Image (cartoon, rainbow, N blue to C red; front, side, top):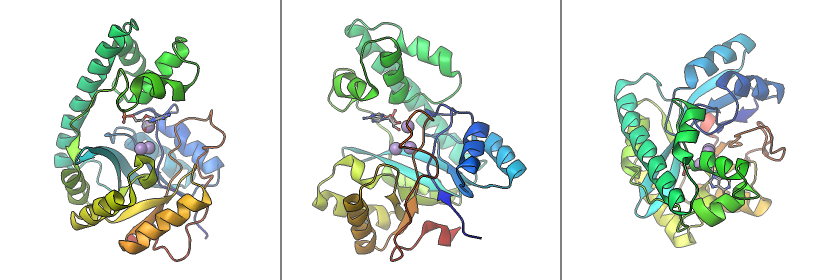
Length: 276
Ligand code: AMP
Ligand code: MN
Ligand code: MN
Ligand code: MN
C-alpha cells in the first residue's frame, strides 16, 4: 500500500485546537496513513492519539517537538519514534515544561506593562494542564481585539525583540538530541528555513546537529515553495541527512495548512521512514 505520511502536527496537549482523537480522525479523513503527533515539549497527547489510531487502523508515530537553544538561536527539534514512557525523557520534559510556564508568566507581565491584563491566568484557565505557547497569547490578543491578526500579535508583541518577547533558556541542542536518542527516537530539525539563518550559519548548525547525533531535516511542510524545497534538499544532500514531511497542522481554520496536504518528498532524498 502507498503510505501517506504527515510527521508533524499539534493537538490541544500543546497549541493545537483539536483533541488528539480529533487530530487522528481528521488525518485519517485526509488520507494520512502514518501520522506523528508532535506537541511542543510534551507527550501527554500520545496515549489518547494511539487509542484513536488503533480504532481506525492509522499508524501513529510517537513524536514530540522540543524547543532547543543552539548558540543564540531557538530551534525546534522533532523527535520521532520516541518511547513516550521513557522515565528520563519524562523527567527532562518536566524541566522544560517549567521553563515554558515561567516564560508564559513573564510574557504576561510584559503585556501588563502594555496595559493588557491577566493573560497568563486567562490562558491557564482555558488550557488546563496543556503546554502554553506564544500561539495562545496570540489568540488571546486576537480574541480580545488587541490585534487584528495572529501575525500582528507576533509583529507587535510576541516576536523576537518585540515588547512582550522573553528570551528563554530552552534545553541545549545537544541535550535535546540526547533526550530523543536515549528514548529510542530520531531527531529532525523542524522547518529549517523558518529560522532565517544565513547559508553559512545553516551549514554550521547542520554540521553541529549531525555531529551531535541528529538524523534529518524537514524538507516538505505545508507552506514550502518549490524554491524552499530545492534549498532544503540541497542542505539535506550536503550534510547527508534524511528528509521528513510534516504539515505542522494546528487548527482547521487555515485551509492552506491542512493535515496530509503535502507534496511528495523528492526521490533523491532518503525518507526518514526508512528508519522506522
Ligand atoms: P513558542 O514555542 O511558545 O515560542 O511558540 C511557538 C508557536 O507559536 C509556534 O509553534 C507556532 O504555533 C506559533 N507561531 C510562531 N510564530 C508565529 C507567527 N509568526 N504566526 C503565527 N503563529 C506563530
Ligand atoms: Mn505551535
Ligand atoms: Mn515549530
Ligand atoms: Mn510544530
